[in-house]
Length: 195
Image (cartoon, rainbow, N blue to C red; front, side, top):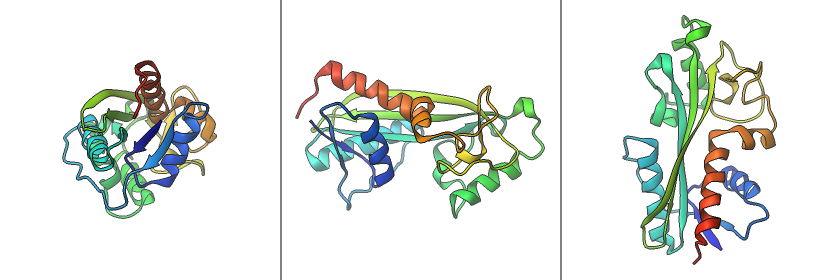
């Protein structure tokens, strides 16, 4: 089965393809000229916007995710603005969070990565959605070289490691995105979605 992954990120296509290995699913990128505006007020609304736009543009079923970091002490920020929280690089965004959290005590640094995922049929109908969370806390400094985004400041629950200190395989098992993709694959298999 051919399934469009509504992203232009080759790393994300590779990551999702690895998690779908062994299944009869060929993941395709969405067209280069398609860049749906994420106007939703929630992760799920944005995932639906992207999945349905990609499905209608390609006439194939499409799946999209929208994800980000929610920090309790910051009233849920950066939230759906995680990728745009501060102009510049991922490092700039991490530095901004560390500065904002500098006076927050250990017991109030809870955070969660959130991933909402939507699957749309070729005609743009929403077939399934899921939303998963990966709980942890915000560290006081960057640690680890693996991963991207906020990984170096996201401490894993009950472990003295950040999500930038674990292997890709372990991250795919634990992460919000990995959890959501596995739920979506379960639905795809059970529903026998085809083109």
